[in-house]
Amino acid sequence: MIFNSYIERIHELLEQIRKEQGVAIDRAGEMVAESLRQSKMVHTFGTGHSHMIAEEAFFRAGGLVPVNAILDSRLSFLDGALESTRAEREEGYARTILEREQISAGDTAIIISNSGRNAVPIEMAIEMKAHGLQTIGITNVRQSSSAPSRHVSGLRLFEIVDLVVDTCVEQGDAMLQLENIEQRMGPASTIAGAVIVNSIMLEAASRLSKSGFPAPVFPSANLTTSSDEMIASLYGPFRGRIHYLDKQ
Image 1 (cartoon, rainbow, N blue to C red):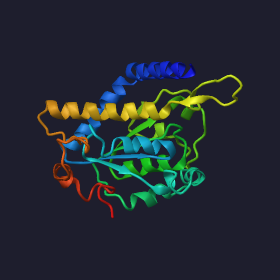
Image 2: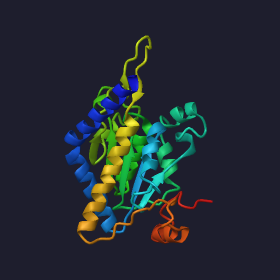
Image 3: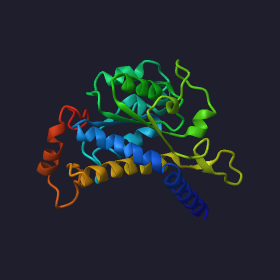
Image 4: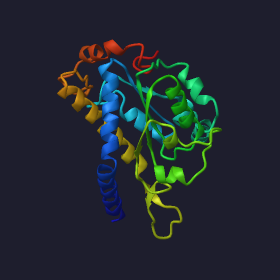
């Protein structure tokens, strides 16, 4: 069965990430912990399918509480998949999105783009750095290096951010060539990105815990040990800084 090959390739990819990106993930965890020690925030952002990685870190059972996912309907297929593709290449759109967000110097931004070449994630990284944020990019360095930027600067995401974590996926994302099917199948970047972003949060929480600093972690809202009141109390200190916490 072909899915066995897919799972085997995913195992190989995750082992490659563990071996080759461990130092970068460790450093990213320290950057996040540094922000949280200063009562700052972590912002996550991605376009297209990468928006799922931004959401993975937000309001997630077992995830850190002070995370603000920067979301946009045009970029997440809600206004149409083709519109999403157009929007992520639109110069100036990242600045428009940031107008409704509460960001400040000392925050950390995690920007996810597997291709790393479209205008909006590149512009988001530039804007975040200009506002004094630490920036982490989750991207495919090999694929990004082989393609021209779609941003006026001519830069790719990995050339802008303070720290790069490589997804290590194959060019074009899909991992398997099936018989009599021209295009490859079995995409891997979402799995890689989710593992990376959760690994960063785990490293940050571990550092905070070892130093005696409280690391607020979101519990599952579906366990009987959780209550709406308890969850609300966790998020209380961060109201106004998390755009989609209780947006009306």
